[in-house]
Image (cartoon, rainbow, N blue to C red; front, side, top):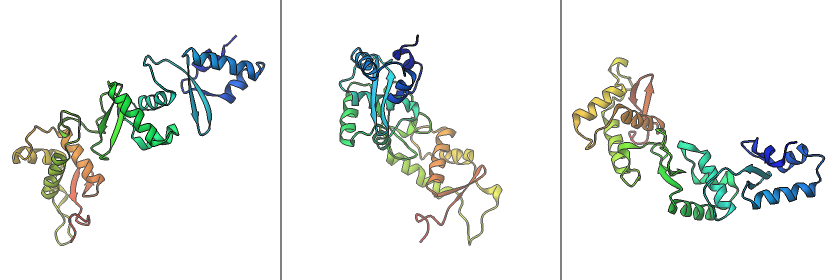
Length: 236
């Protein structure tokens, strides 16, 4: 016969109180509550109180947590893997007050369970497990200081030079498509100009170009780039 613990263990994302009651319909609510309480006290279950109700999940973590809120924040950060999660999403998914989340994050960082990484693309801080390697979508390498802080001055300097170098329409006419630079051309320009004190790979340059396209300062035409003169930076 399946036990409540084995039923919960079989559901990776956890189960609700209603699902447990449905699965063990012949067991009284009092007996179910007593069993869940015992499993929780023994550290075998995680209990999540969300806006949609209470959920139970098998505890497979080796870390010791000082509160249920601390564990909730930890698990949400863990689920974000190498992409990380920012504080607004933590607040939405956990249902916890932002001041409490900030306090929990500080405690987890001090114990080196999690770390923060600044995203180059969105210029905001995200959190991930301490041992996680940040996704390339976030940015790393030359754009970060040894303390893992985004070197915004360096990033902005490279972006500015690249923007100025990329061709712009003249008299409303777009330059010949074949004269527009590709990523490899921009990469070679940066190497020749010596504007970067650290070596940049083609992948690093591609990331900068992606940001400029995201900011609408450049327009991407298949594999080539054109300056967007309608952007406030260049117009007027």
